[in-house]
Length: 387
Image (cartoon, rainbow, N blue to C red; front, top):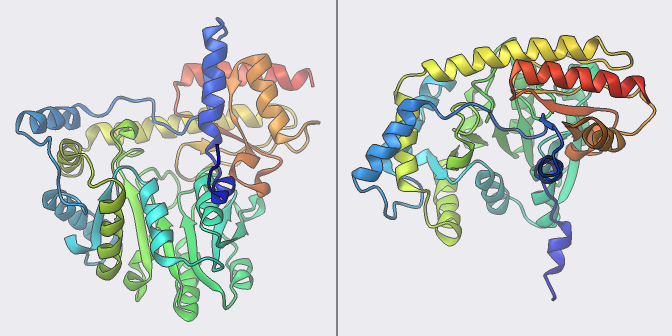
């Protein structure tokens, strides 16, 4: 069978591949602790589930507008206006089935083949995958441990050329848990304005912050015409399987992104959108409780990893991942990913799953119980002692 040559440039998300192998081992009777997948292990809050049931009974089972139901778009606009401190209207909102379509659609609408796109590395692997698939030039912005896994703005400035048309930022970040500070973001805003580029600000973990505060590029003067803000419901409200995300963007661009929705998905599931209205406007108690539990788990896993010889781990400031340094161990990141899974039943991800600059690191998701995290730490320590 012949497929388009561009398909060879399309990457993947390794977390799902490791999950498949972990499930195979479990089917063989092996015990596996899942620290590979970036998914909250909590149930979706009850009030959101009930809102979905009510929406089904009310007949929200039909097509809706490509950009999203007006009631949800308005609720999102109000949420962003309040949390980012800038006036946003419903015409700036496009609702999509998950956050990934915003990555795809933003690049499709703003980038031509041959354009240069700066993206974080290590970073969410779909960034690089889509850039390459579009035949644009992927320009990695190294995210370094010595910078506390934040952005070196001087290094970023040096990467910008006359061909740079687009940049991707992620804060809080996957896989590192790094956070861009206010001063860094202010300098980035100056670069964006000076070089007249568009920016995709991936803020999907904006509500999961432990130290410092989440700073949005959208909130800086002049950035409303330059920034596409990506956020959604998967992480904050444990709604990964519901597939609901959104983008905030200039109204002219929203028109074209909605057109891409028409050509691809038609619309986002209507009763899911009604549940999302409840997520934003209803009780936040369960969501806040999840965040506090993530904080507790973070402290357990960071302390545990730092107690293991030849492993060091910084405290992530947001999201629910740790990115420990394993450079003192005598194997590569990929080899250690396979070793801990196959020999000790601990599923993690190689740092190189998130880009070449991830070599020397592993990513563990602490979206699992404290009991399981402690068991995983014991297994990892045992495995390290036998290398």
